[in-house]
Image (cartoon, rainbow, N blue to C red):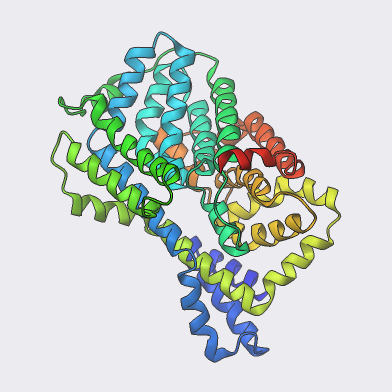
Length: 428
């Protein structure tokens, strides 16, 4: 109660999500210290330990975003979007599917749909409008697919948080996440992008695509990805002959290749600083989520939540996922995975459901909350890059059909997780 009160007061004082969560964490820790859970002298240690809980996730997030930033600054992203329009513009269906893949890649590699929008959002939004899609439906497409990109493999921060909190290895997610994301992404872009409307002014998109360097070529864009996925494949093909590189080092090597292949000279230090400045709120969220998780463990709040989850009738629990999971993301961002995801997976695993598939199902629901206040991170960015000026709720209402379908698929994956276990085995 004190933790929730601390968060509420901080938000009423217009504090950021990260500061609000930090105040809630401190309030919960001090309240627990009154009952010596934890002892007040141990509170700083718990806060410091918690701050490093997701250090590995932060490294992945930082290196992956720098990799995508180098590709974007070198003109590679705009080159891909322009090439898609020129080559497949007359094949509208194929052009939509390729644009969907372009949106999915940055978020899948970084674990953040916001990165997809920051890196490829503006050129893809212009391309979608060039294909006759209104700004409102363009914003809706970007919101849903950017959210799905955050859930896509290889980097899923919600699953990483839950895995870290439940001591479950972060392996076997490729097919349980990849297949639903591709199917739901295709459904979304075809549902919202099928209707064609008259083309609008082309002046702005000509200005953006004119900035592509003359020496940019397809191999300069593709080769860094070949290096990245080649390193991942090599470590799996020859696990006893190669050292374990890890995603941060693999992204760093790919970023170095992208920098060397850039047709224009990039100041890597300045670009790194700008990238980290842009990432700082998200990195701060990861640090504070770790601190919150540590304090919740020390004070017994996590145990209380786990008991509350166990006490709910199973059918009611499955139905409530449609509201609880997105709302937790809308309020706590990634903290929702730590507060609700960890005890939920403990419980589902204890009753015989498959934890990895269940996590994949929940990972489809969490991104929906990124369109809900107070945070609405992906939703606000979608509106911003599209330059949609009308009612935010009107934009959000236009996502109703993909929203419902994604919710149903996510819950069914949790309910029938044991029957989908083969997807995990095929991913190993």
